[in-house]
Image (cartoon, rainbow, N blue to C red; front, side):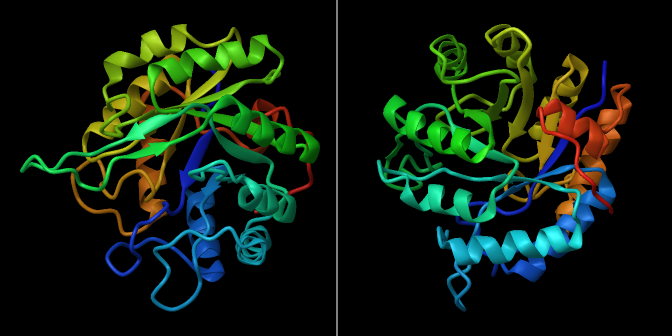
Length: 292
């Protein structure tokens, strides 16, 4: 098997920087980008946060904020590939599209289907009010049209099995073209579990030649998922968006420690982390002059 592209998801959607070591400011994001690049990642997945004091746990679709973060990362690590979030609840996609236009990432996450986003507490109450993460086909079409116009590669995030199967139909009707990239999002309580036994069946549902990676959300269970994905020939992702815990159960001090652990697992599976040239080729991107 060939090399595995390693992605680092630097910060999540609502994680409180007052409680967890997630980066928020452009300077913090650039520092984490340098750490994960040095550890072997060639892609960073980015969410953007409010920059006002006390509001760093909230998402931002301000193109100025997104531009400042991406400019800082590109100045620190010019070769790193940027994968920007586009996940938004509701039909209005103007915020995500404005961010894509402002920062021109090489890759953007495409939420490829809808999910009832649920979590239950031990006492039987909902952890938060039940919500629908709505991604109907017309919304997906608008996001894909913007990505195509801007020359951005879509990364299809799939939270459940029906969403995985939909990706082949998207390709069949001409919404997607090769190389198709799919992420199995495993560990959301109302989606696919973080269970490596699911992976061979999920891979069987993909269009021929599709690239796939695991996004495993949780604690110690995520590492077995990444091990299985690496053995199946897939790409892998980790970061403080997905887990706070290293394989030994200790808390990760930063994203670089998680990528170090993931690269070790990739090598234990008999593979190497992709170089930036290999990562660009995997995403069908033209070669670029880059430095570390």
